[in-house]
Image (cartoon, rainbow, N blue to C red; front, side, top):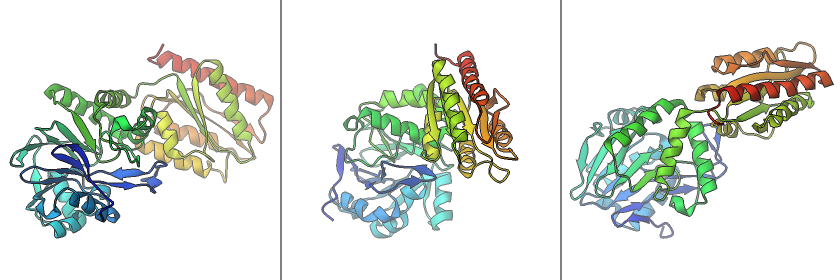
Length: 401
């Protein structure tokens, strides 16, 4: 397969991963721009492969390796993360290449044994350094970023941090470096990745950033397992991670809702008008045309979440149940919130929505607004006033002027 070639990162390190142009869903989050599964080849005296790729892309990985060296020359394989998009073809690769050793964290070795029945994977310790002959690879455990087995590897001589799922993004691209991708694209996709994958572990992200700063690790290049390799904007992405991890609210509100006969939609727009009038940035997101992962992305820097639903069979609308279940698992912090909705004869939705927000530890600022059948002008006025109230409350807690 001569059409697949490795990409040189340095004279001794190559990208040998795979590009998945067609994937559109990953763990419940929409990947409209596809993804990549990054693997890296170190041309040390003991040639070393950092991570592998999703099982269907094994031939692409092997072809890229073969464009640089005979794959049988690989002596070591390092598994920074055992999730299937990075280890799916590992068992087949071991059978074909027959490396001398395979390394992972202690939890990684256990995960590979449990999942693939892979025996003989050697555990490495946090801070341990592995000699590759003429180069050295140092390991740092990053447990729960975002699996228990997660670790990163640092190639000392090249000052490259192989950061597995940290600092990555789902983005299929022919460009391999951050400075080759338009900044607005990588910034959005990095934020989306953080919001939908790493948000629950924000405290651990802060601890990792503090650790990197304390030890003064020199990073000339940061090579994640998804998306472009960082070489020009390393300080920028580290700063964004620090900002996102702190989850400081801004003067922004997200209104997510669904509607049957446009009554709840009218309420949403009235709330939106009140927020806009008070100078708040608003993202109005009807679930009929918004994906749950895009709502979460907008929440990353928001100060408030307002949710609306009609009552259906004494319950909330299915799309809203889906959204709030998804958000609850990601555990966002520092949000204000309120509920609204319409009903015909029973009207449970607003109470249920409010309780779901409380369960998510959202600070409820209003008991909620209900409309029977079509909202009256009085109800719409109350909705606008809710927007003004939320804006006032955001202003009281927001760190921005």
